[in-house]
Figure 1: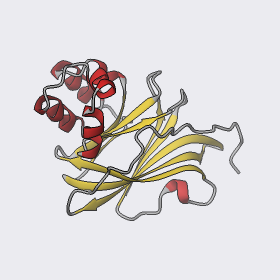
Figure 2: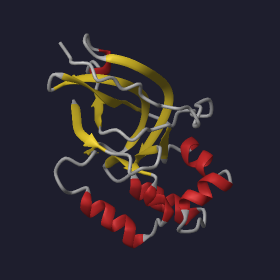
Figure 3: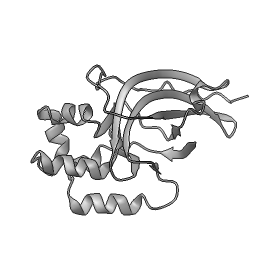
Figure 4: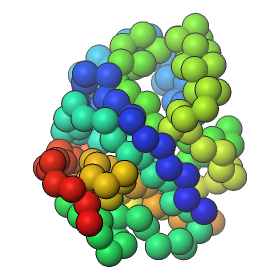
Length: 192
């Protein structure tokens, strides 16, 4: 199954984050982190631990473009691996844990003031159509991240695709490079 979202923006910060946002809220409470989770993630090892525990996947180097965001589940051929797409990044070894039947792509700004009020406001916004959130079974997932351009409406559009495969047990994410830059070389070419 494939879920596709268009015109997704980075909120003027060069990061996207993917995960179960309520699990991140639980992680924050469990580890006694302040509401400024952004500072916590950049000044101590809590960000690394969140990645290792499958709570969040950070994507750095996200330039200010409107993106197509795709979640691909269940062995379907990824859109960025199809003929006509332009693959620029392919990274594997990421893991996600889902405990609240959904994952979403969100921006770094939510981490700057991460409390009940802002999380509830984010969840309310994501109930609107077209927001990059999918319902998915609880459990552990291996995640491959693809980045590049996909042909849409006669043009090539910058895109990220998250290929999710369910696993029976937690996987080891200790070898992923969380500082890897996912910058997309965006072209203004017409798609044939």
